[in-house]
Image (tube, rainbow, N blue to C red; front, side, top):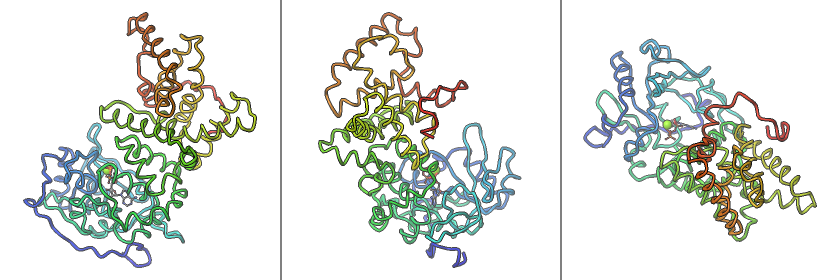
Length: 451
Ligand code: ATP
Ligand code: MG
């Protein structure tokens, strides 16, 4: 690794943890990953399971996916597997596809990239951010370009040992997130690592080690330079993977919420009773419970919840200026959406139903055209949202009872299975729509404003 190109001056020191000294067993590794590992080795290449999977297996968590690292080039990998496709423009990765399971095979590379998507040859910004990278390297170089020590462990298929170049084994056992190298440098290279620190600590129930945690409040503002589309993806991982409450609290604690969701953070600060925060936490706890039960969750509902404090605040301000309530609601929804999408690229297919959930809220205090309202595609989501609002205020109790009863009557009259739209629960509704985006475009509520 040349000095001009390296921003991470860590000297790798190899420790080998032999098979009988660690708990990672082939029984817990996917058959497909094992096939890939063995095939590479048989062809004479180095072949390791790497990253989150090794970390998760060490602490008894079932890995989400299995990544492989090798000294074979992507083209060499491709020649070994018929079911292989290469992705990425400059830095290429091999995906070996087994039905729904994809094993990602990456060639060792020498330096970090800002987005880890493998797009590009390495360039460093004046402020230390790495823009692109395409340099293949050795396993040592591959280890030190990773983010956290816990993510840089290599399980060798030839002797089932774990190779640790950065002290990650000890950190995993002590349940510590520690950046490899100088934390400030590594955050500047890629500010999304700040979110990854919080997310992985929440997911794994790890502590963020103090030198890794302490720069966070100071550097938080760098997040606003990250690509909004990437921040959207990261938010889904933060809040829809079953650890939303812990992630939210972590973001607050480390000063990141104020950059990621600035208007919400301000609104929560201004809400002295803490009612809005209670509502957000209760909603996130619901989301976590749904994920734990393997029920679908929806980004539209999630963002309706996360941005509700901001929406309420904007609405109050507009009404304070004398804007009529209906107009104020529409404008507050558009304004909050517009401001937020500069930071997090919330696609329209989520922001439109998110706004509908907000704009339907006042409808629950009107007890008219009942059937028609209940047939609204967003009725269930809006009703679930109303129930969450009870955590902030008990003024909706009577409306909740009324609309719950009306739904029971409706189910009784329709025999409980006659009306598919009504029967499905809200996040399922939205999740189903999101999975299969509608061909027919919805009429725009507010032209182009939220894009
Ligand atoms: P998860 O359980 O959420 O999948 P993970 O650690 O596997 O966690 P991935 O996003 O799948 O996270 O990344 C795979 C590996 O790639 C990581 O374990 C880490 O070694 C490396 N990596 C990912 N993102 C970065 C980054 N921004 N900077 C450096 N290395 C990264
Ligand atoms: Mg992973």
